[in-house]
Length: 293
Ligand code: AMP
Image 1 (cartoon, helix red, strand yellow):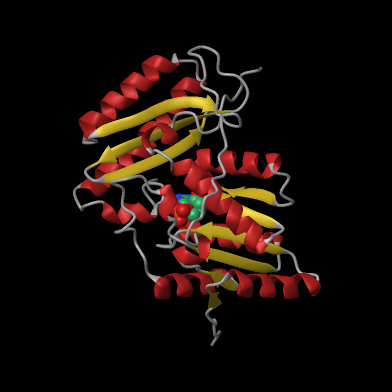
Image 2 (cartoon, protein in one colour; image 1 turned 45 degrees about the vertical axis):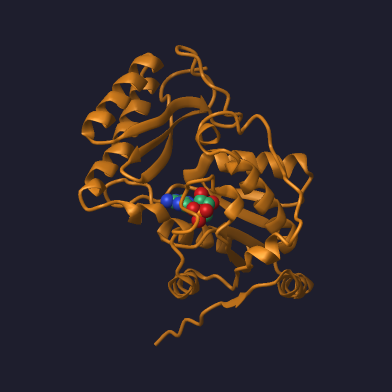
């Protein structure tokens, strides 16, 4: 029977650097997949994508306190080290880096990495300080591990473009790769937070992706953005969502807002909505098949 050994878990920057140095000496490429744990198939797809690019794969598990706003779920965020390690072993991860908060933010830590422009609006408008927390921790993880590749999910598209921009503008010699959103059978984007959904909320949650795909299709076929967005929001609220935080079309790369009739280049439709105490986000491409620029 095939025996899968659990990857080693390390907790310090010194250990991480030693191991990566040895791998590099042996000529191996290294890929990093940052996560906050509470792993699901979406995370594992990133590990597999990393494996396709590099011989050595590191997954980080760090519930980063600085990317949670006041009143968010930092304390209750799902943590299950044993289960996570088993899942990572099955996906081909070589090493788990799970630093403590003190290792990442020693007493007196005073640096923030902040990317402007891609953090105007969308999630940034509803999660104060979130992206500064993300870019600061990802910058540190990339500097600590010094990988050839880092892999991020398209589910968090605003995070992905913000990290790409940070890496480019800070001249970090790391290739950022993205991996498509992994969905449940009914299309709900997998998320560690989906476990907060009650039995009654779960089928309602699946309406989010269906409404989003349908709206992107209507926009692609030339219906006015504002009308599509208003209809989609109304439908989701009457289906049982409590709040639509945003529903907006933006340029896929710059995240600039898009005018009503001026869809051009690659654009995406972004949503965040609340159902009970759960906040769901999703985004899809607006595929303008048959239209010319
Ligand atoms: P998190 O643990 O939520 O911080 O996510 C860690 C990484 O996994 C990020 O790059 C996310 O974009 C990615 N990710 C989370 N959910 C999914 C999903 N359903 N499909 C693909 N990637 C995902």
